[in-house]
Length: 366
Image (cartoon, rainbow, N blue to C red; front, side):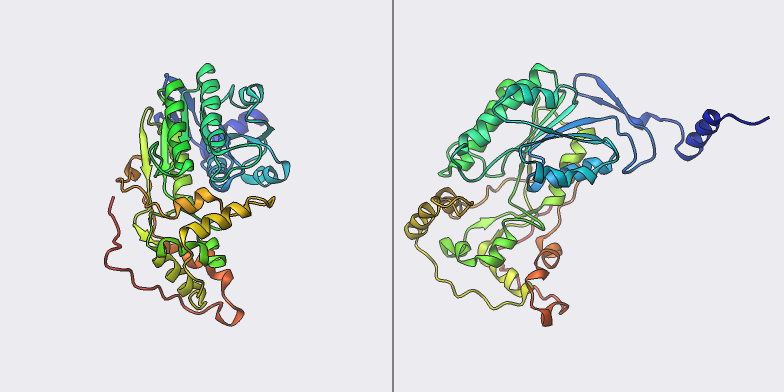
């Protein structure tokens, strides 16, 4: 007697995948159950439906990729079709759902989140444009998205802020990030706030910018302290929060070490095998004037507020990496990956020698 095709299919699924177990069930805040199925990986079905605002940004692209590889259906609201096109192959067929939206249009926001159990808000700008100032881009948009998420009963809302967010900061960007946290908490008290440090990666504005325009990183005589963190570490931490939510928490995700711009300049010079920059150290007033003049061009340039931030050390806060299940990596581990392209042809495969770290710059253990 021949076995029917549906029966054979069920037998194959039982052998290859196995029966569902207790670990396939995740209970989100609000007691909403999520059940995963299928083989692990790209073609799995995690059971989650997630919306990622800011999906076309630096961090957003890596987060969508992480979620897609977990078998998650990702709603990807976008403004520019060309920027959103790269997201399509990050998930299995039908798993990456792109939707055009306007952050000032509440109806399009609602369409993007009304079926989701987790919403990430990564929207933000560290410079102003003719359409959005820093407060509108970072604070007001976050409040609008959180309000609609609360109306639809989204159980897991994650707002990405900045490690140095503070209402008393001289930087308008850091002020706006702190205001965003307050506004989101006011309308959605169960929201999770994530505060990563300055991020580096393949298309970052840290290592690449230091390699291309070292003069702007010599401000404050390059003594400003930052805590750089790998963008893939932050993306993995955010992805883990999908199935391991921590409602009403504020998590700090700084890099494992506190470094000065002076050390980063030496690091980039050593890895690229380029001579150290002979650019002068500009006075703050001159740098601010040049930044203001640069606002007259249509492409993004160094803003006056960014000049201000070059004189502000990153907040000295303990990391919460253990909560998200990620161990952050040192910047030296990945420096050659992102900086090799700045080497000349004859130096392309030469070994990497890192500069010695100053005694005052030490790694912090988590």
